[in-house]
Amino acid sequence: MNMNRKKYQVRHNYKNRHYGILIGSEGNKYESITITHTEQSRHLRNIRLTKNPNKNDDRPSYLDKQIRRFPKKSYSRKNANFKFIKSDKDKIDKLAKEKHKFKLWQ
Image 1 (spheres, rainbow, N blue to C red):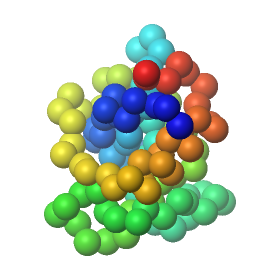
Image 2 (tube, rainbow, N blue to C red):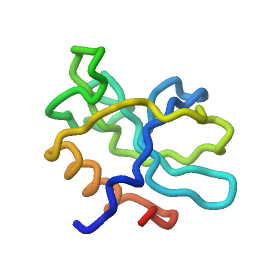
Image 3 (cartoon, one colour):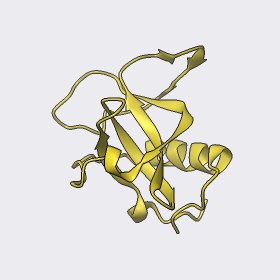
Image 4 (cartoon, one colour):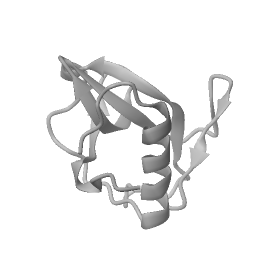
């Protein structure tokens, strides 16, 4: 995958109360992948991350398989200081390529 990973931003979403990895935008909406601590969201199994990107949290983290679209005002302005290891970045890239609808940030 040749996506520019530096463009990914992690911000807190006030509506669903989870952090989201912003992967694209269109108009006044962001497209994001939700980071959660649950193994399953609705009827779908989440993708487990190898290492929790939040250094202050030891619990396992997962990526929600469903891409969410929320208004830009639903997200915090400040980026969260999350660090992803290479294998987790590959999982994010794959999910973003498969499921996105908006133009991805390049």
